[in-house]
Image (cartoon, rainbow, N blue to C red; front, side):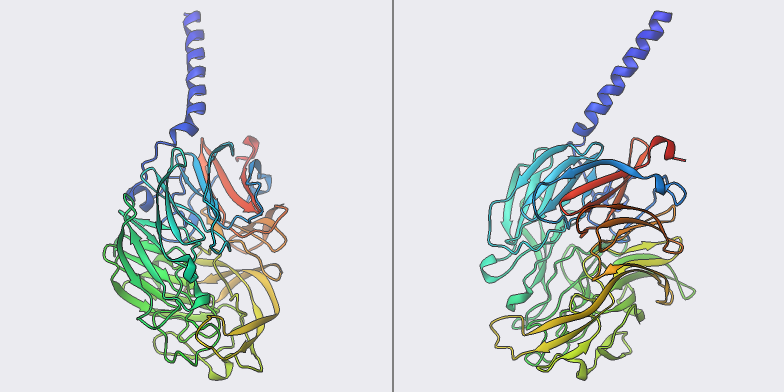
Length: 518
């Protein structure tokens, strides 16, 4: 009997070893479907936002305000390339997939060990950044700087197919992480410098064939770049997407009117691409304030009535709450210094003040051209009702010049002053509950909140931060040694919660020591 017990212990140990060894390999048998994307399990972060809502909130609670100061480095992965990581990694079955321009990696989420690396051929595209990848079944999708959509085998990183999104020779480029809804891979495009028409497109994940395309502007009108991934409501079967500025940029004399549907939030049917409704945060934009910031979906009470809401902290300096069933405005309020609008109309749209149009002599404007926020992801914490965003209060002088119709940039912006501030906005009123300054010039990190009451982000000096969601006070920090331009994620593997961050070209995975998990 003693010998038998010993044999069983040995067998159990061998089986445990097999599980540990086989675990990272087993993940390569992906089967990501709509059900996983709708309700991701704790051990997954299967899309850019984590789930379809864009709230970037984790239900994990192992890391708490009480023990977060014990957070320690689990592993670090270096790309050994100069580009800064701007992508939000996705995680499926223990494998992390992330990108920088022209490159995609598959990395073991437990150890940081590289599983494969794909490099796209040299190209003429704009290498400004790359937001990340998408996954469906066992296929990885990402966009290239020269505006192509590439599908890779998740097991090996080998190319399945490559299709052109738009012609790089005309000035198009692509940076976004695709959004997968059912059997649709939905993508947008960049290229606002060259007076180009832009669009949202749905592609068949099996073949790469176009399923539908929604054009932002009518023929003859240009701009409206769609360079950030949208969100999705499965109950309404609507995708929500932000669009960029009209062109020529910084001057509107050659394009009178509201310039629909630029600088807008639009709701589209994902099966047909048909427009259902639109709301325009910046009518007739002349300050380069794309409205592509994440349209965050929240269900809950608003002034005593249950609502299906869409919230956006927009680049133009205003925080919006919409009824996402119909696009009707519920709240419009600035979340920092804003001086460009004369009033908010009955539709909830800020209306430009003519005296604040860029001019040859220069005009003082708040915020600056980078906006009061930008691509960095906000987070919504359902327990506190706080919408938390990396903001950039700023002032600038805008100049305009005549637009000759051949080039999109018809002016200049000279920043005078700005700083980075993490802001916690009460979505019921738009008022700031707390602020946490993160350095002069502004930071580039997105925000992650957790059910335990933590807010993870970064500062302008390259430090990762854990703040108390209740009051914004710092509970933990660690230096990255480089600038931060991505958003944190969280996942749980083998009973341990990880926080994943990046700085420069390095991924950092953090977890509690065994003794710290109390």
